View 1 (cartoon, rainbow, N blue to C red):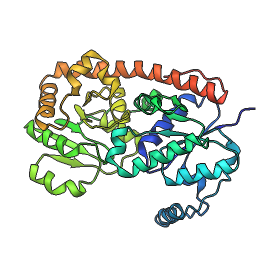
View 2 (view 1 turned 135 degrees about the vertical axis):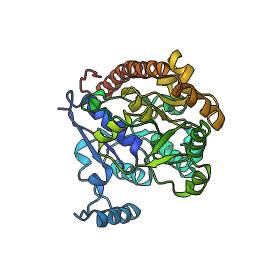
View 3 (view 1 turned 180 degrees about the vertical axis):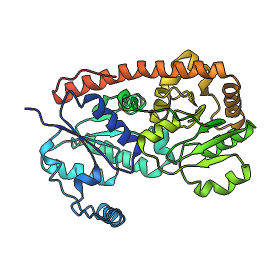
View 4 (view 1 turned 45 degrees about the vertical axis):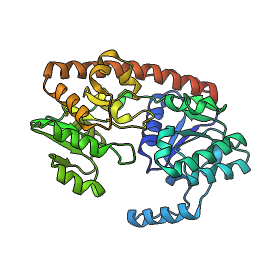
Amino acid sequence: MSRKLLLTAPRGAPGPMTALRNIKGILTDKMDIDFFSLEDLVFPIKVANKSLLRQLIRVQNRLKMVTLDRLLPYGDNIIFASFEPLIAHLVRQLSKKGIRPSVMWCSTLSQAEMVPSEVSLLKILIDLLNTGKIKYLMAHRRIFESLGYFIRQAVFFPHPIDLKIFDPVKRQKLDGINLDLFCSPRPGKNILTQALAFKMTEQNAKLHINFKLGKFREIVEEIGPKIVVHSWLPELDYYGFISGMDLSLQVTFGESFNYAVAERMVLSVPVLTTFDIYMVAEDPFLNQYLCVNAIDTPKVIAASIKRILNDKNLRDDLAKRCRERIEEVSLKNNQVVCDVVQSLYGTPAIATK
């Protein structure tokens, strides 16, 4: 009998966690899959107090105080999403037990350049692949087209999209004109440029964000756009809120996929983005209006925002096509993921939207 497949990533890696959740979603009725945060699996000391637990996790992570007990039963059927020193340590320890897990690397080369520590981690990852301690590099489309060129263990493994997640979503009606720039701040999210672009539209509108302005506060306050800061929302409330947007901003760079774009397309919300986001760029109609060709130039982004906000018919057409397009992408990507899982882990699966 085939072992279960284990999917795991650190809690602090929202993109990889979202990818794994979607993988489990499209395959959960077809095969045995477990999906846990890495912290829940490998740290031996746990307490009920959440504040104390966070401190313990930091200490255990730094000291690499880990247990393999919950990993060993899966054998080679382990996919780590994201890659960090702790995962490298786990890979080496599992290798001593004759187990070779797989790793999903989620950063483009440009992202790695922007975060110096990722360049070092990429070198470690390649060394572990070349010495046979990692079985496969699970590579999303843009990763496969770059790292797959010289890493023979790379396997094309696109981002799946579990459309069922959105079935219970109830659209929230919002007053006035509303845009969102929801993201997890990191190099490449292009926050200041998009904030200034929003201001330059001179629209009577609100820009919603889900992060503390932090180091950006003073310059954003100087720019003076109408920004509404939101705290964490439960998932369905979050999707319901986003579905009420007139337009979303995801004009970022260094993205391997961007689930925020995919989610907005599912919710029929036009989302301004870049030519790197293939589910938008490869559709001629969406490409024309939603792909920005000068992502570090606020004036260009502002022109695209104004063109869409000032034409409701265009906005409605874009919303409709976004939903149609993401359904096409999900069907194709989900089938590839199912085929790869069947090939690598020996369990038949049939794709679902």
